[in-house]
Image (cartoon, rainbow, N blue to C red; front, side):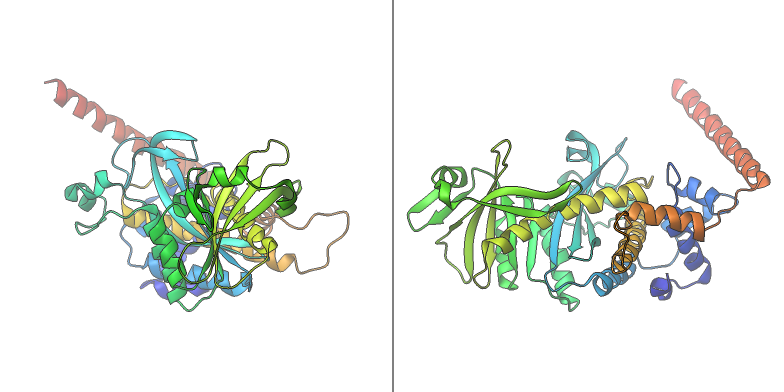
Length: 411
């Protein structure tokens, strides 16, 4: 928290931000301004709401601090930047960026809010270092709606690959260096993003659809057509990295492409050893690299799913109940900081000798121990009763207001 202290103009919001981050790390079954304020010993949620809505502090500057913290402690010469989006299912139409759209969280089209994240993934650990809210065209075409949500009238529509490019360039412009970028089909199918990565001298392993067309010395083909031509001897069994149940072994094949431009281009094909299901990746490298390197980068993409799972399960990333963009940006940035703390502690703990009959400490176990041993939330009977009265009084006012609006609409 000392790293971000200078981002606050007053001591009160700085201290409250610390209590909010502790609340995000807590074992509360539901994390929002009300539950965290009660857990932290505050008399009501107004202070937490003020911190997220009106207090004077720069969420983007704190985001930059999170990035520096993660890179400093999780630095790896072979680190990969992974881009991916995640959605939060929402009700109503007033939450910033919400509309009916596909989200992998639900696995279908739902009324949801979607954001793109940039994850730094290395051997020591992984954590999100940047975030961009995806604002659909239905919003950017409505200046009044954008203004009400705190977006500003000058906002323009940006695709998810454009948001990914913005974050990657911000990472590089801050003076950090990585060799590779990984992402799914949303990003692999975008030629502008691929060209931008090549111009910055970055290698990439980006998933593409089976229908993606690539050019070889024999001509242009669909990816699945080329896969059918791969001889049996060309497939190699390699691990895409360790999972919860051991190494993730797949069969892999690589085809050299004859597309124009500097560097080396390949089509990487992954085959499931049990189901024979195929996946395809467009690859670019500034120098020749072995198949094992491309497989390692492709396997890094699973780190982003682990990051989302931990950020949502342990740090409340998706549990905000906020409508305006400034509040959203502040909440998710502090959630990123909370998760980064767990990832950094885990990385340092894994450098210590461990007993053969114990697995290394996980983020879940670190959170449990930290809250149980280092944090003592206020839980006196008087405090609990005071909050019970406050909630009931607030709900009574809300009920009265609702009945008045209902009566006015009926007249």
